[in-house]
Length: 194
Image (cartoon, rainbow, N blue to C red; front, side, top):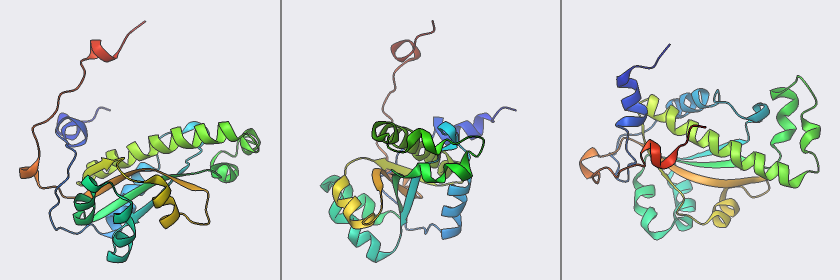
């Protein structure tokens, strides 16, 4: 089965990164739908290391805003929801549930470099799946990396082994405030077939 051209437009071709948000709220139920869709994207050994905090309340936003780069404060403040996409450095403790076919947990215990690379790589993949899921469900996205990871981790992940990766504002963007679309590399500039 192939996705329709219209659906591809919603997810990729016509979708844009938004910085200015309409005041329409994003329900908790919709955020759960986003997660329930994104969780099916593949990760190595089904390790699923992404951990997400959806920041919506005034109090939570007040904790997040001082962590943001100056150019990202207003767009984050006005976004109806902001996802902090993190990865769990103890993701392997869930492998007996997620990958029961073998003792995959033993691959990681004590192997710090493998834990770090696996958590970061697969958590990043899951963050991309979150964007695709959110767009598929009618939300606009504003992913960014302009923030202080250490401050975010201290404010939101104290007492855990979660580490922030990137942030994505979610809501309904104001299309009238978009800049002209930037170009992308052509196939021949970015790809080789061997």
